[in-house]
Structures are given as C-alpha cells and as structure tokens.
Image 1 (spheres, each protein chain N blue to C red):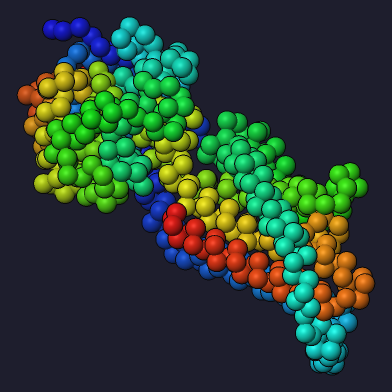
Image 2: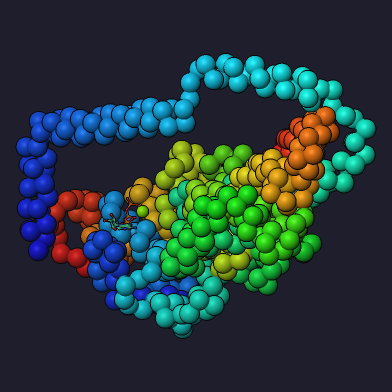
Length: 284
Length: 255
Ligand SMILES: Nc1ncnc2c1ncn2[C@@H]1O[C@H](COP(=O)(O)OP(=O)(O)OP(=O)(O)O)[C@@H](O)[C@H]1O
Ligand SMILES: [Mg+2]
C-alpha cells in the first residue's frame, strides 16, 4: 500500500512537469474567457443606457429650458420663504426625527437577530440562514414608501405608519449588512473562546461582538442618516412629519410655506449627519 | 506509573472531502506527562489535537477523559469537558480587540452562567486571579493593552495564561511556536513547561522542531500518514527513526 502511494506521488510529479507548457495556454484561455465576459457586460450596460435615454425622452434642450423654468419658479413663487410658519413646523419636524430614530431602533433590534441567523459562520442551521436571508431580501425589495402606502390603509395617517414603514425597509438593509459584517469576522478568535468551554451566547458576547461592534455602529448610524431623508418623503403619502406638512402646503399653493418646510428638512438632515459623525468618532 | 488520564482508542477522522487524516490512533496518556507529537506536514497532528476537544469532530473511535467518552458527550457535557482542556493555537486565537486581561478571563467562561459570561461580568476575585496569572507569565505590565498590540511571543503567553485560568487537567498546544522567532519560542516553551510542572497539567504539544521536542518532552509520539509511527521516551528517538518519520513514501514498519 505504501508502495502504491509512492507510485502515485511520482506520477503526480511527472504529470506536473508534463503539463507545464500547457499551464500557460490554460492561463491564456481563462484570461480570454474573462475578457470576453467583461466585454459582454460592458456592451449590455451601454445598450441599457442608450435605451433608457431614449425611453425617458431625455434631451439636453429640455434640461436647459427646464432648469430655467425651475429657477423662475423658485425665485418668484417660493422666495422668500415664509418664516412665520416655523412655529407650526416644530411639531412635524420632531415627528420626522422620531420616525427616523424609532424606525432605526426597530430595524437594528430585528436585524441583529436576523443577521446572526443569516450569517453562515454563526447560524444554528443552514436552513435557518436561508429563511432569514429570504425574509430580509423580501423586506428590502419593498421600498419604504410602498410600505407606508400599504400601512396607511391599515393603521391610518400619521407618524406611527411612517415609523413602521421605515423600520421594515430598514430591516431589509441592516439585516443584510450585519450578516455580511458577521461573515467577515475572524473565526480563529471564536475558536479560541469556544475551546475554553464557552457556550454559543458567550462566544457571541465575548468573541463576535468585539469584532462586530465597529461595523454595527457604522451601519446603524448610516441607516439613521438615510432614515431622515426617507421620513421626509414618507410624509408625502400621509405618514406624518415634515413631508406631510410640505404636501399640504403645496396642495394649497402655499409655496412660500413649502419653502420653509424644505429648508427645515435640509437643516434636519445636516444636523443628524453632524451628530452621527460625532457619535461614530466617539465609539469607533 | 500514574493513572491514565486520557485514553484514545481507534480514533478515525475522515474529512468530508474524503481525506483520511487519522486512520487508527490508539494512545494512552498518563497524568502529568509532557508529550510532544512530531511528524511531517499533513500527517494529521493538528487533526489529532483538535479531535480531542472536538473542535474537529472525530469520525469514529473513543476518547476517554476522566473516565468519560468525549466523542459521545452531548453539547452541555462537551462544554464541561472543554473547560477542563486548555488549548493553545499556532495563531494565538486571542480576541484581538479586547484587553489582554479580558482574554485571560475568558478561561473562566466555562464555569460561568450564560449571561454573566456573554456580557463579560467578571467579579473582583476573578479579575484579580487573571491579573495574578498574567504576572506569572511575566505580562503584568501588558494587562490593559489591546491583545493585538502585544508581540507574537507575548500573545502566546496570554494564550497560556487563558489556558491556566481554566484550571484544566490537560493542555493541548498545536504548534505554539511555529510563528515565533527562536528567542520568543524558547521563552514560550519555558513558560508552558513551568506552568505544566507547577500545576501538574498533562500536556500534549505538536511541534515541528525536533530539537525542541527532544528538549522538552518526556515522551515523543511520531505521527505519519494519520497513524502512530513512533511512541517512546526521548532517548529512544534515534536519528534513524527521525529520518524515517520525516522521509517520504515506504519506510520502516510502524511501531
Ligand atoms: N478542513 C479540512 N478539510 C479537508 N482536509 C483537511 C482539513 N484539514 C486538514 N485536512 C487534511 O488532513 C490531513 C492532515 O492535516 P493536519 O492539518 O492534521 O496535518 P498536520 O500534521 O497538522 O500538518 P502541519 O504540520 O502542516 O500542520 C492533511 O492531508 C490535510 O490536507
Ligand atoms: Mg498542523
């Protein structure tokens, strides 16, 4: 038997030297296939771009005149913004903040569970990972606005609807992001802790969490940044907050009030981005 | 001699891809022995050590530890047995972003409630014990540094401290010095040896360096092609035997 093993290894070596010249042609062949497929993909992207330019009726002239008309609209109808309504805007602004923040908390909590279950290296079983991934993919495929439209019919108008809509679509994004961060952590460190007799929760707390924390914080804060934008949009379909106010004043042709609401959204976004940047600095 | 602490019978391990890493391992280990396993790359040394605490699941066979079969243990039982087995890895396997002392405290996880352990709620007594163990491996000044700020040799001493903190009866070390320079290697091996003598740990170390093996071992086991090829005290390990362990292909009969 040992003799056999020896023969096999000899053959192996001979085989290697015999194939040496053809290794290069193999390399060339693979390279050619790769270049071909890259060329193919580039061609498809170009075709799609041409098709969509034609499909949307995009042309430079309308862009030019459109810009002109937008400027006229802004400077005659929206300018100057009616700052007297700021008092009325405080409430909706707080609603928008509340929707973004509570929406984030909901998606963080649920995504943590789904993320751990979906990550290949941590899941208790691969079927659970599949199911968890399917759930996040489904939630991700429905935009927050669509969730809001559906929820308005059930829960009614108001910030609660917006909060849940943002929370649901956020799970789709954070669940996937967390799972990917978790899959990239160093398994050797987990093994070191597991070998001491630690159980699953202890390995998660003591070996996974320290490696996961930075990615977790960045992604969650990034989601908060995104939520404040989404929350403003959601108001337009009746889910409360500044967007709802904006919608109301546009419907009544009160463009100078609308301008104030837009400025407020702008300020809110900048404020949240500033704060999340500070928090990120602190924690990471 | 002394009582048998670990009895391995007909241990086999075949990886899912069909590699027969361990063919039929029988080994009886006495309390307090310092065993060094040598053998060529791919012989199955790591697989053997990792089978003992089931980081790698054996395909068949028995591993009797303190009178109980590890192979048959359920999850809860396995964790109890694992806390009694310290493991030291070639790559240290410390949690890099945590302070050194916390890595040592991890040695206590197997004795703690799930939630206290998961949240890292160690009490004063446990922290003081961990600090004193760090002192024993000469790292009292490094206790609050992040583990990855330490040199390789220091990290391996932290790993030894973590294992000591488990109060195990056996220590398994898989190539503990393979990624260290000769000086650090000696320091690490000395600390390992000292800990094992002081605490009476039974120790199984995989080593590539035959000279180190001869220097530290009471008993040497040579593994080749997934089988035990040599088993005896250091003085029986002649140059011929060493050569045939590391030689390729058919050689002298296994013991
Ligand atoms: N996860 C795995 N899947 C498949 N085969 C594996 C796996 N791990 C190890 N092997 C194979 O099992 C055999 C024994 O490997 P093992 O790592 O135990 O050897 P070793 O003696 O520790 O070698 P080295 O001295 O290089 O560390 C080798 O043929 C190896 O390729
Ligand atoms: Mg190995």
